[in-house]
View 1 (cartoon, rainbow, N blue to C red):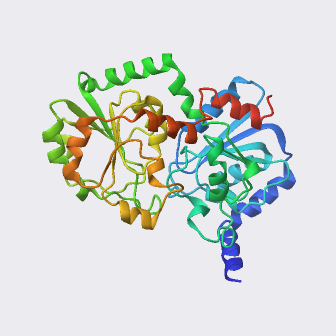
View 2: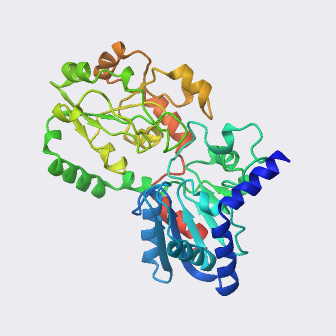
View 3: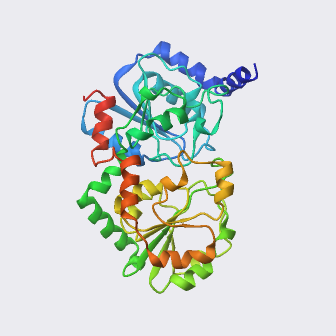
Length: 378
């Protein structure tokens, strides 16, 4: 009874969308050539959505619309709600790439394809229903997807569990935004562009400091900066290195140390996509971030700085044993961090094993494969 009430409340919170959607389902036909991209965390098309959008646009027979907003905290006006529900009701294909709470309460009309292009690749820290012992008992979230993509055959089951959908709806088609890693021309253009935009990066080894957030979501996300000594890190490494500082967009707090006054640090947190930065990175410094999957294509050193490892395991946990992910050294105490970075260790055999398990469907042709599969090769 309690779980039924929770589902009812979830629908009541979206009652205005439900009413409007039903209205437009009666009023509008489902158009086989209409494609809609939705996002509640990005106000511009990026990542997988951008690549899929560009590929569909090249086919010149589809009418494509977008409905984007920067964050869940930005509310839609009534006019925007009407536009959104009309677009959903009339679009054959609806693509999302993240959590999208509005659509879960809708009972989508027959023929609508709701496809999750999930923003992260691989299967690292547990998400969605994987974090709950009784996943289908209390919420409608994720469960109306007709399709989802993953980066390898081996992790289809993990995403099926995370989204609470049947494994037949999860396809190992690869991750569209990884196609750039197999494009030599793109690689050279991006490197040239970044060095021109940030000349301070020239003639230095580049450390990319890119940890993920702690907490549950965009509202309470944080990073414990007390575990990291920014001043000491600069003093010990600034002779040979420069550090790109790239925080997860959910991290709401800031370090006490003023990194903007230290030439060793270059704050590129505002750069939405981290992938381009990987082309110029010499050492990745991260923790539980899914950026490790993309970085594995480069076969370069990575250091896992995990001072809160035991606490994180207890609060979040991983799909697989941690050793399956750490193709570089783990550091749990800051005092060992600098020397570990200087060593720049690479375990090529472990990286290859990691790639074969988590990234085998990514080959530079993922975007075309995704569009061909869902649009039936049209």
